[in-house]
Amino acid sequence: MQIWRVPVELEDGSRTITLDATTFKPDGEGPFPLAVFTHGAARSAPREGPYDFRPDAAIRWFLARGYAVAVVIRRGYGRSEGQRSVVEDENSPRLIKLIDERAHDITSAVGYFQDQPFVVADHIVLVGFSAGGNSVLATAGKAPKGVRGVIAFAPGSATINRNELAHAELMERVFREYGSNAKLPVLWIYTENDEFYSPKLAKFFFKAYTSESDAKQELAILPLEGENGHDLFLRDEGPKIWGPVVAPFLERLMP
Image (cartoon, rainbow, N blue to C red; front, side, top):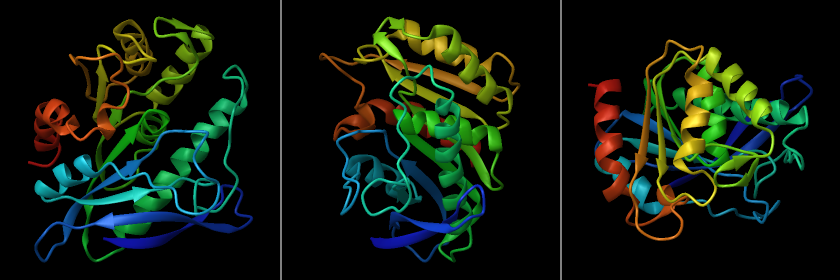
């Protein structure tokens, strides 16, 4: 395990900030394909000091399959510099700007790690959870060089309840806009009992994103017992449930 400070030039070129990132490497000499993880948008996350986003079971699962893992903390979270963008109302024009900022952070981190000797530069996969899922979906539209595919766990936004959106027309437009530029294969993963996104909403987001894209897209809605499966990616038992879906997706990306 290593801690990194990843330089990111802001979109307007005004200055460079650094993002906190932690890398994990499998046994062996390398170089290795790389999975880049990005987190959700927990408002309780600290704005300074460590932000311990570390889905250990998921990290171990990827390491066991020969991947290095880089867990990147986006701007304004924990020790990552820059202003954390928050949109109080998903109907705000700032929503698209916010997602673009997150995609910019991820793309910059990918470029930085591709220059490191332990990484196979053209064997990268992006993995995002919740709001981080939105972020990797947006990044797929930018098609960063060397990224083979994207895995989005429970992406979505603007819910009144798990079956209803507050701004359905806006969400349809936002997801369609990002999907229209998507050129990378994407695997979407939800659970049947997600607290925020029912299978109905999962299919809504997926349909909007894929409506104007020819990229290969897959939607998996997994059965799961209990009251809420939104955090499946973070759970210790998660890989037993999502692993059988993710493994063949990765094999198709990087045979």
